Structure formats: C-alpha cells, structure tokens
Length: 208
Image 1 (cartoon, rainbow, N blue to C red):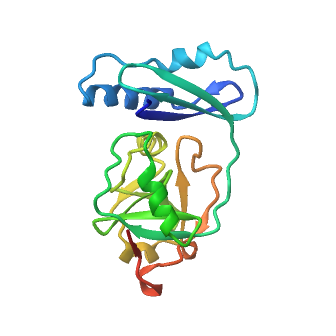
Image 2: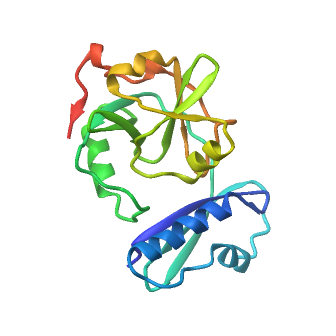
C-alpha cells in the first residue's frame, strides 16, 4: 500500500518544479531511514506522455520504492467560500497518502473549503498553501502544515514574503489565494478576505 504521493504539473508535455518534487521525495526516504529514492524524471519519461494541455501527474509510492502513476486532465476550480477550522494536533510534515483527517475536517465544516488554524496561526487549506495580499505585496504564513513546492519556488524567487498570520490579523489583508504544484499565483482565482465566512468578529472558528 502506498504511503506517500506527489502531484506534479504537466503542461504541453513539460514537467514543472521537478527539482523541488524530487527533493521532497528524497527527504521523505531519508527521514524514514531509507537509502536511495525513486527518480521522478525517469518515471515521467517512461510514460511517453505526448498530449498537450494541462495534466496532473500523481505518483503514489512507498518506502520499498514501489509506485503507481496516474495522468489526470486538470482544470482549476473556483471555490465559493472558506471556513477557519482549528486543529492543534494534526501533523502533515510529509505528503502522506492518508488524508482522512482532512476529509473529517471538511465534513464538519459549513463551507466548500477549510483554512486550518494550528496554535492560533493560519496554516494551509486541505490541499494547498495560502497567499494573502496587503497593498501590492503578497505574503504567505510562516506557519504551514506542508512546505509546498510552489511556496518554496515563489519564496526563492522573491515573489512572496513570509509573515506571521493569525485569525486576529487576517483583516489586515484584502485578498487571498491558494497555491500548490498545479496552481501558481499568476493564474489562480483571487478571493476577497470576506470569502472566509467565520472571521473572528463574525463568529468563532470551528474547533475540530
């Protein structure tokens, strides 16, 4: 049974952010005391993918280096609303295949998507990192569940900055957006902060 996965952007037969995806896979093997890794670039080439358009390459793998692949046509979806959900115990330091805790939080929420609050700090949605806009600049929380490859890429290229973001200071920002390997911050939907239905003054955030 697979324990981890990577979702990689493939557009017009080109693979994106491969070095960061490979780094994360290598670190996963090393953290759990395993030598070697799987070669994501080699796996992609072996698929002989020859279709243009936007696809998500999902590679599920285990620490014995067994893996399976799916090449899935991808379209960006708009989200109607978001809800802050408090969960101080959840650890998602690695890209685990088991996402039951995310699913449990989403079922209890009364919105399309959740924004997870951990130790009174904004972290991630159930499937992405976050960016928040103040003036003309974009910021990402310095707290996160998973340090995503797009987040790392944008920080490295100085397109965004890290800052402390809590439920109490969310109103300092005018807009936000979600980023992950499939969604960079040039072509994402941008949401007004009011899309978060339970900002502190309009109601307590949901404890899970």
